[in-house]
Amino acid sequence: MDRFAASPLSRLCALAVCVMMLISAFGMFAKAYACMDAMRPAKQTAAVVTAADTPDITAQPQPTQTPPVFAIACTPVETPRQYRVLIYHTHTYEAYLPDADNPYAPSGGSDRRTQDETQNVVAVGARLAQQLEMLGIEAVHDKTAFEPPKFGTAYLRSLDMLQERLENGETYDLIIDLHRDTYYAQLWTPASVLVDGTESARILFLIGDGEAGFSQKPNWQANKQKADAIALELTQINPQLCVDVLVKDQRYNQHVSENAVLIEMGHCDNTLDSVLTSADYLAQAIARTLKGN
Image 1 (cartoon, rainbow, N blue to C red):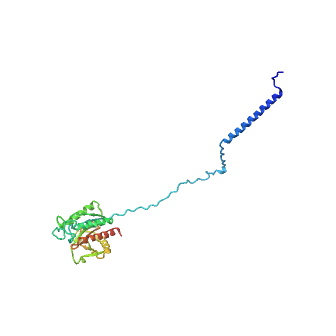
Image 2 (tube, one colour):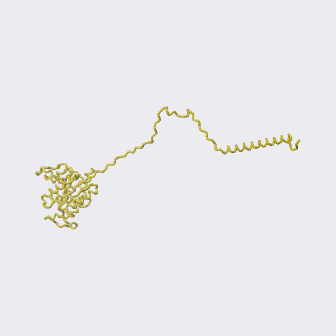
Image 3 (tube, rainbow, N blue to C red):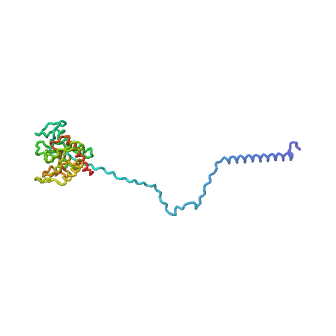
């Protein structure tokens, strides 16, 4: 027998060693797999939805969900009415009693007439227009001198001015021919009044009915109604500030409108300052009448 030949016992031992090595290797492999499995992220399991859990959307129509609509009630803004007044002077050079504060050079053959617009009725018209504007009334002041070339035909020239304005589409809530009267004791007593301690010239409204041979007559009742309303407001300021409204048979160009009046702002023996004070009160009365307050 060859001495290097393995005996049966040695072979059995070698086999046992091999088996033990395989078992050890298998154990190590199992441990490694377990570690790798632990490192993997956990799987999410989907929820199982059954028919019982699902709403039957075909059973009935579903209402459409719309966002709420908020309605805002808007009140229309009413634009305040704009009133317009025209002021002019047929007898443009009529003036007042000169004094130390208001001296002037007389013109036109009278010591109570002047072409100086700072001293005659034009100055009063300017004051009235200014005060009306401050009270929210649009005032148009026409300073045209209508007396030249002849005093007796001044109304014809002022009529031309009025007709041209109206034919051009101008509209007015009140048309004023502003004058200064001659002093008549029977009419102008008292000559002036005190309002809040200040001397104020009195005011006279003159309305023409056109009965002195005029073919085209004014609607004098409408014109008088306007004059009466303003005069009433003046009496609220002072009971004697306004002389009673007079109606005469002349026309005074009042046939061009149902809002036309002639206003005598004091008389020739009043001072300009006293008349300017009254112009302020007249503006207040006009504004209240037009605006209805």
